[in-house]
Length: 239
Image (cartoon, rainbow, N blue to C red):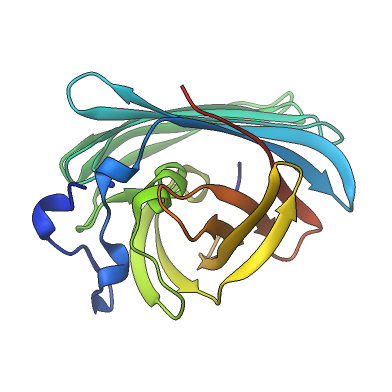
């Protein structure tokens, strides 16, 4: 919602503030999985989020995210392909209905060159189309794929780094700060887990993502900072 053991040839991905071991991604750890979350709003069950990672052809991963927010009449689905080598985004398709305002996006990457369009159609109004034609400096991330990247990312408490990702809800690129907190224990409907809080601060939204300490990591909970909205892991399904 709106809201990679192959270690990229042992290379480091470098954020805006330089290189850090925290951004190493072991793609062998990114095994297929489906996470099912309860969307809790103001303490009440108010929807669901499903996030699926599967291996695709030609050394790619397919990532799918589908969200339903019942009381707000919001649904959204995101389908993304990324390359196993380098975790480079390849294509992104988004469809959303935000209380009658429709969102459609078709984004493609040719290396760091990002092109495509984002169409927003308000209720009883003409569509507004944003054309995307930008170059994204390495490392290349896409927001939807970052949850999957954390499944194999070498995160440890105290890590603090920056990066740039593409966010369809921001109509382009955002500079993002990532900070990893201390290990704690957390209970959600899917069980009790040893987790680390990963604070992700972006201009459009701030999330705290609780991921398991053991790899391949599972996302256990996602808090939307500034809103009484929490996504809690309800079930984990492996192929």
